[in-house]
Length: 261
Image 1: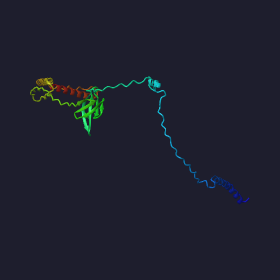
Image 2: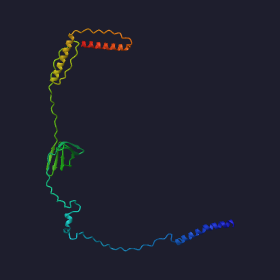
Image 3: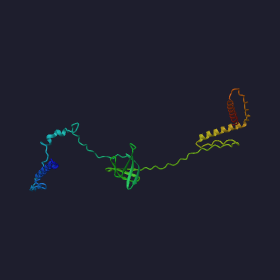
Image 4: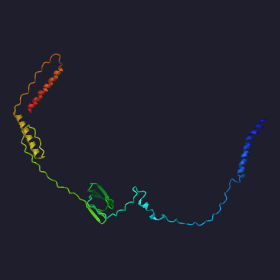
C-alpha cells in the first residue's frame, strides 16, 4: 500500500466526524435561519377595573362582656390580677431650703448657677431654663437665682463673706540685758513668743553668766604634766606604744580645756 493511500485514509478518519458535526449543527439551527430568531409579539391585555373593598372592622364575638376573664386575669401579669388604677396626683408643693447658692457665671450669654444641696452637701451645676429636683431654674443673676414650681418660687441669694479684721496680739517686752564682761560670749537671743518663754530665756542667760563668772574667779590650775613615757618591754611593737602616747596626750588636752572653761 502506498503512502498516499495511507494519508488519505487518515484524513477520512478526521473528515467524516467533522462533516457529521456540521450536518447536526445545520439541522438544529434550520440551516442558519433559527440563529437570529425574534420572539412572537405578545398579545395585548385589555385593562380591567379593580374593585376596591375595605376589610370589615374587627369585632369580638359576643362583645367585650364575653371576654371579662381576659381583662380580670391578664396573661402577661405574674399575679394574674389587673393593674391598680393610677392614683390621682395632687398639686405638687415646693420644698424650700433644699439648695444654697455658691456662685454664678455668665459665659457667651449662658447663665450658670452653682448650687449646693443642704442635705447631702453635694454640688450641682444648672443653667437657666433647666430643672433640678422638679423645680425650674427660672432666672440666674450675678448675685441670686430664682427657682419656680408652679405658682411658687424661691430666691437664693449669694452670700459673700467679708474679710475679718486682723487682731493685733500684744508682744511681751524683752527683759533688759545686763552688760557682758569683755571676752564673754553674747547671750542667746530671746524670741518674743510669750511671757513664759521670755522668762525661761532670761533665767537660762542668768545661769550662764553666773557659771562664766565663777569660772573666771577660780584660779586656773597648771596643766597636768605629761606622764613619763614608759619604756616598752622587750618584744612589744613600738607602734603600739606610740598610739598609746597619742591617746594620753589627747586626754590631757581635753582635761585642760575643761578647766579653762
